[in-house]
Image (cartoon, rainbow, N blue to C red; front, side, top):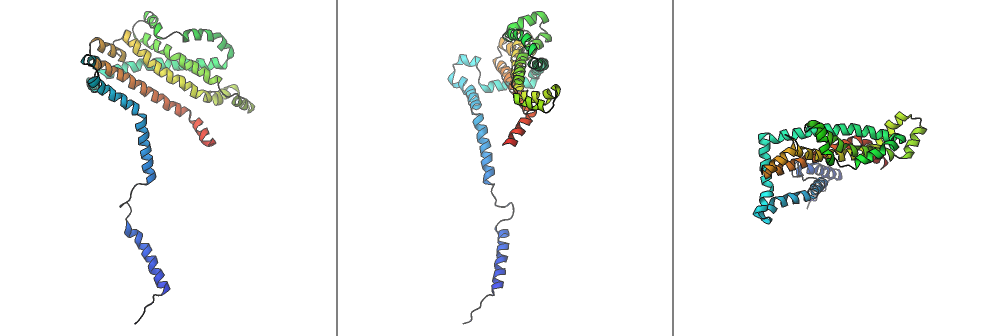
Length: 302
């Protein structure tokens, strides 16, 4: 019997060749592969977070759709239609172009009044917070007007300025002015004194100190007031348009109610809610843009 022994070097080279060929034989790139577990977990986490955050909204919409149909009496359903009827009325208003005109009218008034309040509130707030004597002189008067509701002065604005655009823009500016003013003052006064001392020790003059230290530190608090003012400008404008106007979302709501077009009325209310939500998201994005230095400092510290 003859026994054949492989040479050690020949056997080693054959094993290396098999190991080099086997990976390419097992699976070609892109064939039979599955997503990485880490990516799947991240996607699942994002979807789960989105569902959890929107759970309350979805539950409310489901109650609005099913409640009038199955829980309310027929007489109640006349004044509280289900969600799909409101959405159908909303679609008809968009198709006819009616609601676009009302949105444009309301946005024009709101942006004009809000812009005036923003410029006046930030400017005066910075001056009052920077100069103590000015604060002591103006504070009693500002407290008096701050505690006077804007809607309580609506008849005064209407009598003095009429039922045109001036009265509506003025009442919006009045309602949005005080949140911006008070939060600007609070933002400047709550700046860390150590930052101010350090800046002065570095030789910064008053203007550079205000530009480089005071204003950036006060931005988050100022934007809190700006967001409050944005919401107030929309809400007060809707009330003003209900009193005397020929266009606007407030006019649409009260006109639909008086004409017994209940789905149109709810469509207008839903539009106001979505408009306010959009304004809030826009202001939050602007706040993040102007506060990027705080995020950079926090990430560097961590």
